[in-house]
Amino acid sequence: MAFSPNGAYLSTWVRFVKGDGDGEAHKNLCIWLTATATPACSFTQKTQNGWNVQWLADGSCFARQVSDGVHFFDPTQTGPAGGAGSPPVAARLKVDGIKSFSLSPNRSGRSSVAVFIGEKKGAPAAVRLFDYAKLSGAPLSQRTTFNADSVDYLWSADGCNLLAWIHTEVDKTNQSYYGKSTLHYLTVDGAFDSRVDLGDGPIHAVAWSPNSREFVAIHGVMPAQATLLDHRANPIYSFGAAHRNAVSYSPHGRFVAIGGFGNLKGDIDVWDRATFTRLATIHADNCSLCEWAPDGRHLLTATVYRRLKVDNGILLWHYSGVLVHRIAQKELYAVAWRHDDPLKWPRRGNALSPPPKPMEGAAAVAPAAPKGVYRPPGARGRDGPSFSLHENAPSAAAGPVAGPVGSKPAPSPVASARTVPGARTVPGAPAARTVPGAPAKKVVPGMPASAIE
Image (cartoon, rainbow, N blue to C red):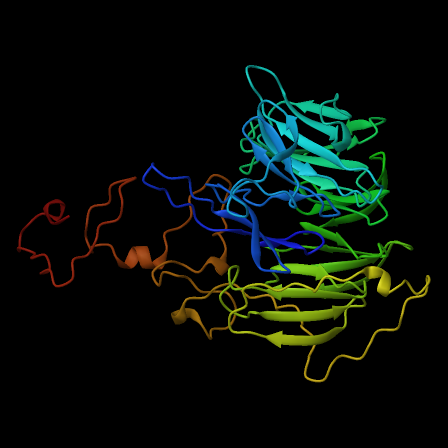
């Protein structure tokens, strides 16, 4: 389920139930009026992937993808069946071959629609921008590319710029098992569009600044580079290379958190954007998510049950790296800050506030101590690493036997002890094995020595 931007409507989805074919299809996507808890309209949505509708920022209209484009609906208009049916279509955007779409924020007073069109019959894939007020007109801007399977839409806060993060499932150069990704920049006024040059390697994360004039991209093989770029995709500053794969700005844009989650340790670097100074490195082992508080001064990190079955809980940090609170949970499934306007906590100028005192009982989380080399139980407690997994093998700590170049090493004492006494030695043949309990060779008086051998 999900709320509309103004909270007036609630969208819910349940699993589609196939009927007997005589009646109307199951309306499993329902939009409710939150004030009265009554259905406003409903639709048939068979798949859970992309089930939810997309709203304009003011909540006056929502959109759904159809096979040949995007349909827009007015939630205040009801169809013939009332809340049990679909409302009439208020506007249409016809796009053949559409695979996904996204509505922009309209902080600038202008709403735009981005659509992704897949490759077809040798034609490249494309990302196109349309003006919501002129859906039948020509695209405002577009980018075309081959080898595109899906796209993530990253809008700037004012809705005037779009970063299209395009993915392909298979890397034809065989450089990555996880496919390939590229980043493309488009503006709604059509004045600028280009591919963002981030060099070779994967793109791990991208985040816009709240001021809509810059963004940070983490890219390249590990340790990955974190680069700050301006609103024309020109590099401004490099935060250096580290094992990081996530980035987020504080709500006011003053601080930047660059972290490494998932299969990485969970370390988070907090940077001051004004001075390009690293203020702290937070060690949040096994962290699953990281989110800024609306006040722009605190970070929430958590380990949730779907990621890890142990050590679930919430940690609250000050941007200076001080742990101010901890909440342990046996099973934590989700956590998020309550939405609030960041303007309620205005910036305190350029001066940084002093670090707070850690909350009583909330001890600092120290990074996990590095673990040594694994030793089998029978080898534990011995001095030094001079042991072998096989009792019959010579110790690796002893090193190779010294000798002339090209000479063979001398046989080990263990190998000599396993030979049969008096056995004939064949050059190049493996040593003979002694069978425990076998009778010794009988020596007959008068037998020649050659026969005994």
